[in-house]
Image (cartoon, rainbow, N blue to C red):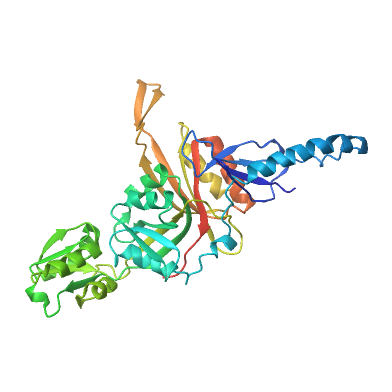
Length: 387
């Protein structure tokens, strides 16, 4: 039996036309938030029915034709105010060689975030921002078409601040980019390694190059951005200072590369998310990943039960990340021995390998909703398997 799933995001709607639940789906009326904050009107509603479609008799058809005309007229009037959903074909408006697509990122030109943007859109227009939150605002205010957000790297782990921003804002994950970062030691032309007394860079770049820097014996200075460190050394003409940044930053700011791949781990991979105002309609033509965030009811084994939802459907869980709730960090529960107890209350971010176009993914979220006090789909997007 086919099931139609309709996602409504405020005044934004699209029809997924997904199929394949059991006959029990006729009783289904669960709602899962798709890209909206708790309490908002954005929901993903699953609807199914095993009954045969109703066919009106001839005498009813004529009587209802006038009503249908009036309803249709009203709908056509209202539909002009509903934005069209972004599909794969709509996304092709911005092909990879289109110079009109604007990508927001944190940092100065030459930073690794811009490298990630250029990997997916080689001729894009850069929209540098001074803070991660401003990359979200740039897209929300139509100053950019998409944003590139680093979410984790193989050396330093997850970037928790950006997980919090995903929940605070209403942007949708529409893609991901994996970037192999080449950390380089840069300096002014003519300057040698032994002349350096200090090295400037972002704290994560400094930490990732700790063994090299310890051997070099220089002081380390933390700045806000790798490309910013390169720019500062160049503009100030610092002959006793080097910067750790990308090879492209060296070219942009007129610096020499004294050493390449100075990171402690040979493979330093950064994973970025691509964010947009509207979600894409997932398909089954490639590997897809779905990202969700949820909070769970209290009770023994509740997290195990939530994860079992995926195991029972042979859905591969790629990542789970927990963050304390900001507004209500403590949960008061009844305790048989102490009367009441207070525990941290957590948000769980989960990535799983499945497309929302698959019935098993919809079925998993439907069952997960029974265990969750809040559930939001952050995005369903094609996985990046290249470096």
